[in-house]
Image (tube, rainbow, N blue to C red; front, top):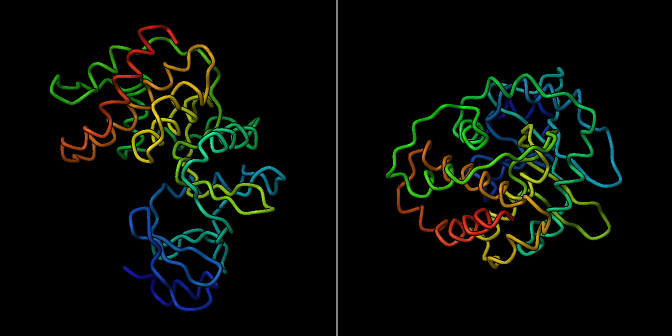
Length: 263
């Protein structure tokens, strides 16, 4: 569905709207704005505008753009500025560094109340990964029972992190990295890095060794376990076909081995 002309006008978008590739296929570019249907709670947009840093030498953040009347949602549509840069597969170490910079940008922020209001599959999977939701997982769900049994305590401080960085960091010469589609969670930063590693290996052809080299510190395997639970449980909650589990098989095997060895 294309954004209506009145929505484009209200956000001050210039030029025709052109559908963008990637994501869920629902984003459109018009001039220097990207418009898409509201896919988060309105409270998330308000929180970002109140707490996100106004500017940074380390990162560029895609923050919600207000309409001419100051609203962030117009007839179910939201708008964000176009940020220069491109995603480049293979820059996983740099994206892991962005995970730390992103958390530092929100240093001092308290846990957002809207996190408890989310009911979508990603939020449910995240809570399952951290043992915050009592969900009965059938034994025939691929990989999940073994991963859940492998969890051990990961006692590290939580902060604001981005839960989907792998394809949402843009690089441009002479500019700091740009972070788009701000997907916020209240977790340890190493969990955010682990999601990058799992995504890279499962979807971007990274070697299995990345699971160990992206963060060689002790205890990282527990974050990898939770990152896999997060991704696989999201597929399960979204009722994706069971054969999607094949993309995770080798990664699950390696992570379970690392967890068993206490890495």
